[in-house]
Amino acid sequence: DADVTQTPRNRITKTGKRIMLECSQTKGHDRMYWYRQDPGLGLRLIYYSFDVKDINKGEISDGYSVSRQAQAKFSLSLESAIPNQTALYFCATSDPGAGKNIQYFGAGTRLSVL
Amino acid sequence: AQTVTQSQPEMSVQEAETVTLSCTYDTSESDYYLFWYKQPPSRQMILVIRQEAYKQQNATENRFSVNFQKAAKSFSLKISDSQLGDAAMYFCAYSGTNAGKSTFGDGTTLTVKP
Image 1 (cartoon, rainbow over the protein chains, first blue to last red):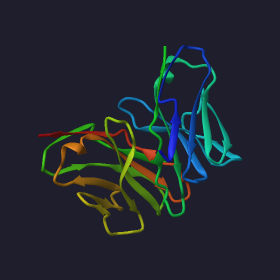
Image 2 (cartoon, rainbow over the protein chains, first blue to last red):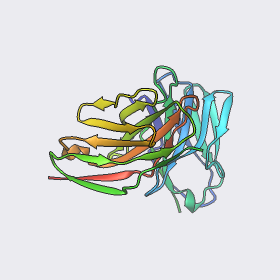
Image 3 (cartoon, chains in turn red, yellow):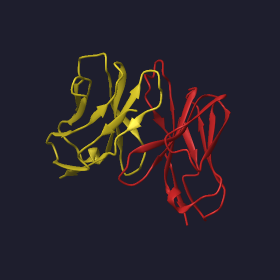
């Protein structure tokens, strides 16, 4: 089983709909992240969380919200989806100690907003 | 804020040959981590190699090695004996030692010709 699991793998939705992307991990890491990848661009950070009570905005948080339900779960919500939120979304975890900030990624969620 | 620049959107290499992917970064920190990640068509992000800034010795992982020039803020990836399975998009990434989160370049698409 994957250490970082994202659901769904693919999603098509309509403009104005609320959707949630879910991420769960079995690595035992406190730190979790949501990134967005657009064609020709690298990954850009949307939100990150260093523990259940510590949630921080990344560089492109507008239009998104997150919830850290437990150490193992970190969800990303689009309250009212718009077409320019069509992208590939990645969840990741890291361990600043032994892991030396290596990011461990889920398989990604491809989201299309029509 | 840190920035990461990959100046080669696309590169190609003949199978069994050597190729070097370039990356430069900007930071005011003295200690940090640098990474190369690979994203094959499956879209899974996979760590290729990691370098700790305080270590002068260049990191090596089998056919993959880096040329880390701290003063020049340069971090290139050399792939020796290129294989068809090396075809992917490669991302250079920076992480401060205390930040946890990573900043990514825009990626280089590597094509391997048989």
